[in-house]
Image (cartoon, rainbow, N blue to C red):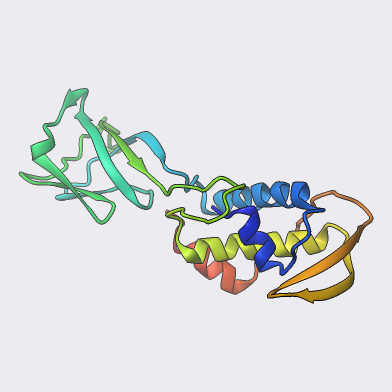
Length: 196
């Protein structure tokens, strides 16, 4: 989601004294975001069961769906020519996604879809972040990393300008990641768009 170089640039510091700590913080920040929205944003394959909607569209609760591998209704494969992907929903070309009832009160989860969704993540060690993660999500991860780093007991002792980066000597009293603050409203507003 974000790289070490990107994080150090955001924190405006050039020393490598805390690279290991920052890598842990980056991992924690990504985990925090994914926990908040309720799923991983990393590109992978998913298989889920759905109920029929009685409509032509069947919404899938993930973002950035890149491919539908297969669809089965009651374990019978649906031909790929019978559906298409549109705005994270599966459009049935001929007909509706019928609701199938178990009894008079309960709808059956009889539609099984295997699909790929998510974003490519960079390696933390990459020099340039070429991920497909939206910039606003990267911003939230960087802000979280900054707040966590500050909470880790680090205190800037000296600071001197070195080009556009700041070179800093740090002193730490402990390396325990503790972050219990609630997210600020502006960061919540960004993440809330990705909750499905």
